[in-house]
Length: 190
Image (cartoon, rainbow, N blue to C red):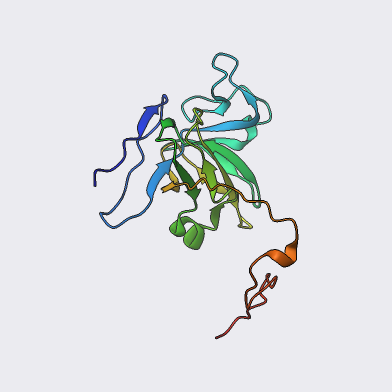
């Protein structure tokens, strides 16, 4: 079976998603820019407004104190327990029954205390904007974000679109041993 075609448009500063091994299910994605969670780019309404591009100091007085010039370039310094939205640098066209999930990278979480809070974030086949990753610093110390840092992974999936059949009475649903038990009702051990 031939793999499906996914078209990718890289934005300026974007990096192509990359599988780091032949057995990897996910493609690592990298930070392109810190972006606004509420404002679109006034020049191109398909994308979020860039707050900091890692190439030049930001103009926004709320972002400027977060940016530091280190010997290896500009960084965005996250405060402890801060969340920030970063763009991952591309827009996609996928088959209509495909989507991808944005998930954390285990190494960032275990070694550095950095995770993704909108995970799994679903990017639908009809979305044409840049996907955003909401990065969270779980630490009690600051953490520096850098352009090109591998921040999350994406996993491509197929969606099923079932036909719904309305059942008037709950008692008419097929009974199971579990029933309505949830939220840990099966216990912690076998």
